[in-house]
Amino acid sequence: MMSLESVPPKYAQLVQTLQRRIEAGDYPPGTLLPSENQLIQEFSVSRPTVVAALRVLREQGWIESQQGKGRFVRGRPAMASVEQKRPGQAYLTKPEADTTGEVVEVGAVTAPNRIGVLLDVQPKSKVFVRRRLIVRDGEPTELVSLWLPLDLSGGTDLTSGEPLRQGFREHLQARKGVRFDHIVKQITARMPASDEAKQLAMPKNIPLLAVFGAVRDASGRPLAVVEVLLPADRHELEDAYPIT
Image (cartoon, rainbow, N blue to C red):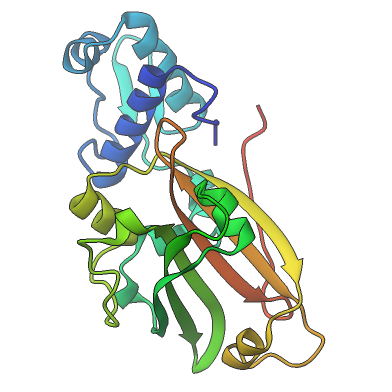
């Protein structure tokens, strides 16, 4: 996926908005996309901005151009389906109630070093964590932690021990008015702590894969971190991206 930090804000916003509308079914596959003039008028942007955004959507496979007819919607490209398999991304968008598991920790804690850096808080600051143990086919498979600054946790349902009925992104957007823009991912490997090994029913001498997704808004401000701990003997990570 193109880095949205490398393009002008209006350009990036238009690309994202059109992608969201296609995914939501506002522009169904096979239908005509609004014309350049309609997009210019609706979004109050210049023609070069619209043309550039449409070029990206065409190159990525979201739309196709037909001479003399216009631009038709193709839908979410096949490459994008791989993105949904990225650890952590699904936990930002899908309701917790859709996944079997239990909340094992909720509350304010001292930020671990890596989390503190990713959230851009002072060392030893308190942050909020919501941690769930995910179970598949009766076996624990991963520990998922959602970390966020304390001020973003207030007035939300994240302190509840019950699974959320909506996605984390949707919930935080509705309650706090924040907008997720992009994720910066890090992957490390380490040996599990004793409590982690016990929760995940891990044998001795098996490492953990730790996947961190730092969620930021369009200005680059950290909003949250999703941390997924995966026993290395039960998971493999796959990624795919276009060559530019």
